Length: 270
Image (cartoon, rainbow, N blue to C red; front, side, top):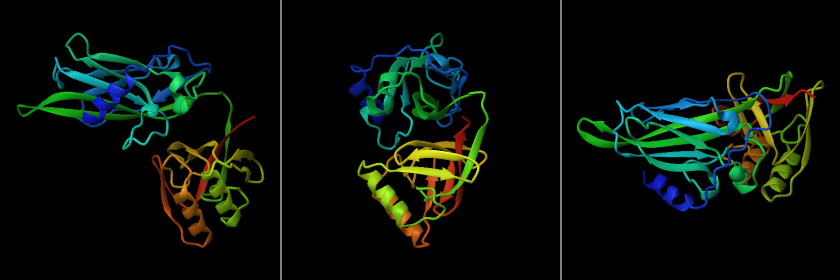
């Protein structure tokens, strides 16, 4: 609760809600809440208008108490939330007749304030803080969801198999990959080409890439080998170790992958 209130105080004066409609057709979002005592549910039916509604079950939560609603940018490290990560924040009183709260995502705050014309595909952390009765004690509950936003283009997609850590896509993890990630960590990005002999993907270190394990699809910054949201020294180390056959386990959202493993990169059809 302390962290949410701190974020609320820091950002409320700056947050101007954006009501722009998404420019792309067939946008959808998924992601159920868990945590607390199960009082919160999500409604993404208006995601095309950048709106997310959280509903709190007043038979499970205490009416008359404050509920905090927080929507964070794709790639946010929820253990260390910065002001720039916050796409929407508000705090309202929960009542029996006012238990659904709609957050309107501020597109101007996307990507740390660089903005977007429409909500990009990605994974957006959502947090709802509220109070509930736990055996006679008022307890703070924190419900968490990851809103996964995707667009249906109507086109087929292909996948390219690459070795995780083979950043330049030449079929092996070697010194050139170490160099590419090192340059990326310094903001000096390198163009790469991934190919499986049929499909080809032009990508630069620092670009967003979609990877899948067949069940989950995650967006990652190309070159962010350990999946922590930034290209840094740990990624250089992971690729260097991989080039020496000393492979490192990594986690990209819900996907567990080891440097040297085959990984499917999704390529939209042209």
